[in-house]
Image 1 (cartoon, rainbow, N blue to C red):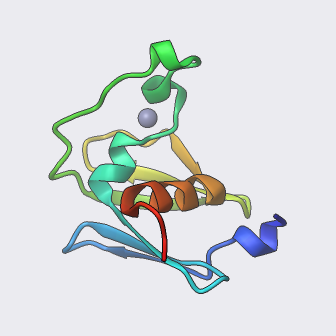
Image 2 (cartoon, protein in one colour):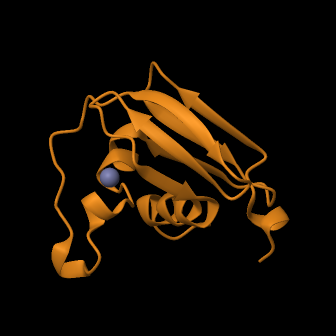
Length: 106
Ligand SMILES: [Zn+2]
C-alpha cells in the first residue's frame, strides 16, 4: 500500500476516556486505548531486538498521553505520562493494533 492509502485522515486523542481514535482513508475507525498503546510500545527498550528480549509491560491502566509528535509522514511518536516516549508508531503498526484488539472486522 502507498503512504497515501495508509495515512490516517485524522487522529483524535480523547484525553478523558484515554482512547485514541484514528480515521483511515478506507472508512475504518480504530479505537486504541492509551494503555494498549503504551503496552504495545514498539521501541527497542520495550520490544527488544528479538522476541526473546521483549518485556511484558503491565500496570499501565491509568497511563495518559502527554504529547504526540509527527515523524515524517509515516508515523507519530507518543509520549506517555509515565515518562516513556521513545516509541515510534507507524501507520501500519497503528492499523495492526486496531485490528488485533477488536478481532475480525465485519
Ligand atoms: Zn517503549
